Length: 437
Image (cartoon, rainbow, N blue to C red; front, side, top):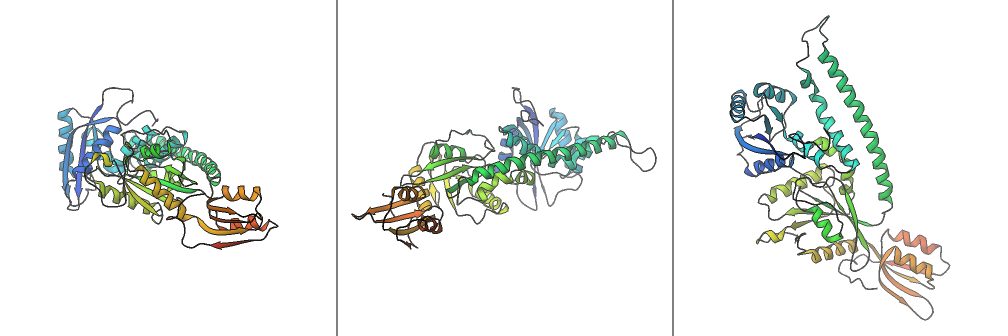
């Protein structure tokens, strides 16, 4: 599927395709209104319009139709009477279930994963994102190719039973696997280049913005870093990692990275395809977990994000919950910090907190050097945050500084100096100290 097409229509078309949304509550649970509302937004983001909804409560999915034959017949009748040709399920369906539902209803059947993949394809803007989405789509469609050729298959065994459908299926599978291998090689080359660029930032404190889709991460990055990245009120508006440098008021800087938003039941194929993008989150020194404080389902979505962080092995990274969009609600959220990325409310407090975290992560020490020349002073100021620099009449200096790369980095530099020197590590220094040169 090309990036400028949705499951329903061309992006340039004005008329939205009308669809029927099917939601099923399993295992004795009730129908979740917030889940239905999210599916409606997903359909809209993919270029469709929900005209009618059908819900059902079941103890478990039906192996043949997911909803059971009787409900499938009811869905088919409603779709026919309303003139609808597209069914969207708020669940992941097996290839066999999709085939049987399409055969019964004579409608196109789209499950949750295919819908999310389509939205990612629409929103992909860079070559890297387009390659990752295509890889995820091919991985999802490969086991489903057989259903596309059932009308040409010959059943049975023996001479004359290998019909054109089976031949075409084998060709399509081979082409899909070949294309997937090609995409993986291209992405490996792109990722190798990204690692080289990342190595140039070694020693810089990295902050990753993570959160549920449409929580305002890109708007927050624009607010604190003047990043100028694309941001809109739309699900999965950001797919590529964007990193910007933030200079802190007390000295030093951090790298802040915007990442792809999470969602409940995020397809595994997307997690696999975006593994290098999510490395930014795994390798971060601090995660700002951005949550929409005006969302009625905010705690459940926050739980989804934390579960996803665990799945990508980022659960142990230090994190702070940032309640965004506080200008849209009068209630104050219990917890870390409330901000409005749109209005700027609470942003100074957030910057201050980032500076405290940054300073606390440095290797602080006191340094004495009998003779400190200009080259050594420049090196120290470039590779650390300097809180005090005192020089006496003899040229000796006493310095309090926090090293970006640790004390051994400084010891190695001082070891090349002819003048005597000494280092005293500080175990409790950093976040509560001032940043005054």
